[in-house]
Length: 484
Image (cartoon, rainbow, N blue to C red; front, side, top):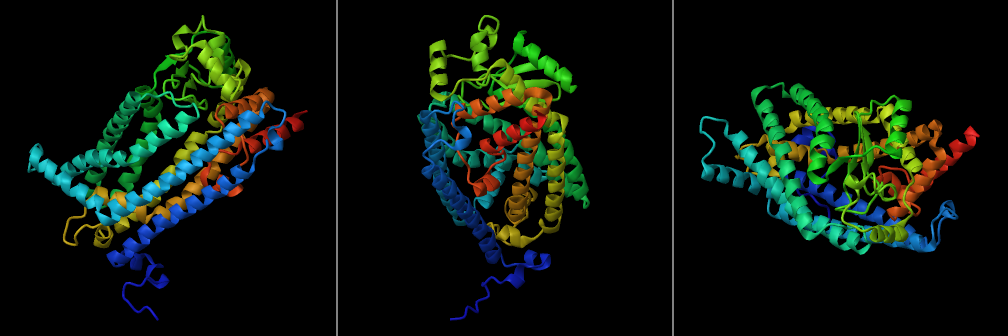
């Protein structure tokens, strides 16, 4: 039987921008939410490709044989990866339920926006002569941040207290976790309030808001690049300066060789929350290293590093963890990994990523300026036709739903760029003369993190923002052979 209903979707109806912006709300909702389901289906399908590969890879891959990867450590790594994938698929099922019930069934955005107005009226703290939408926006940011984090918290809790706990990585208590969640909410609100208020104000006061929003976004990105490592990270993990010693001297010599204006080497105390070891970066004039990453070094130099001793574990407990997962990094290997980070700094990879994000935001604001007054978009998310069109809600819908297909493609491209940048940084460190220690360090840290194994190429392309371990080792080996 031929479907002749007016609600039937056709390709012709959505191929032009004008037709797209005049779709019936029901049709637009079907397209947007259908895309969400399709993306989740693709994600799960690609997860199963990697699960199949991990499930069938029961022997140590040739790349890792004879390099400290024992059968026991490889099996632990394989099991850990399988458990992470199972948990990810469970999270997708949870997200599907939340999206279907809250977004489609209950119209969460409309309900939260209405609650914002009710709360503002009850509080009576916003003068009637002021712009009411800005007041509603402030309340909406607060309650929406809390609301959506409430639905994210079970995912993080399961990952922390089930998967990570089972494999010995979790060091958090329940109280520590709850404090972290409260801090996350507070930080998101403190960042979201000024940004949301400024955006709404700019859109309301000028018809040429596109250019102003684009310029403000650049200033915001630059500000948060400085803000995050200096002020936000210390809210979650204590920062301690690394005392004088052989490691600090080695890092100082590396900085001088690379022309890096080093002023401090900072230890980030992450051992209170996790045993993972892969946090290290350079920013502006500092080198930042996780105390987990320095575990072996700090124990060997306990007398001179008492102030940064990794927390509340005894030497025996730390040794037991090392025996379980890996062997830790030597001073030379730590310097080699920082040389890799110097490669990112030297090639301005951070600023190239900022530029790409800035161009992406320009496209986003362009789409928003063309679409934010469309009542169809709001009706698709349960806003009555006669209701006002909140600017912040429009931004959210355009970025997270209307342009999600564009975001999907740009995310794949950015992940590819990130993988290329990591390989280039590896080559930089090898050319500096750190090839052998870099190779050992990359292998050791991946052993410590249960990240030994082979990745499906489709999974790597789709999900990973860093090359596989085997790809990095093969690149380093090839470069070392060239230099001999």
